[in-house]
Image (cartoon, rainbow, N blue to C red; front, side, top):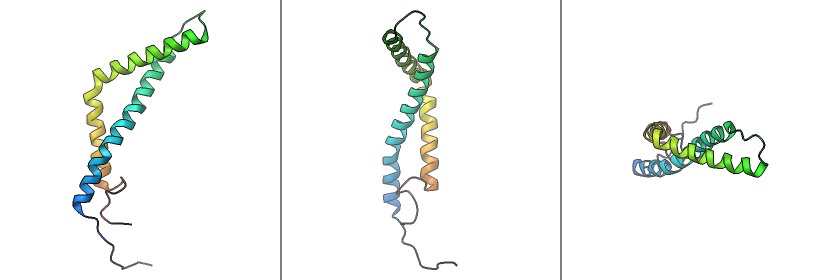
Length: 104
């Protein structure tokens, strides 16, 4: 059954404003995910034979932190371009809350 009831449209200004506000959490969340993965891989590759758990944990944390910083210094621009492409794609298709053409 097709419903022919006209749906209320969301203002273009509101859609653009909400879309711009979504850029900040997308960048933050993807940076957290990427940094965690890069740091975890670097920390896991560190092997300290004969050291205590707290020593290896501390060394793994330091190695992960340094690897994450180095990664973002080297690939920061590429990472941001990918984040921007993700954001613009989700915004244009209306997948992000508040960016759809019609109000639910």
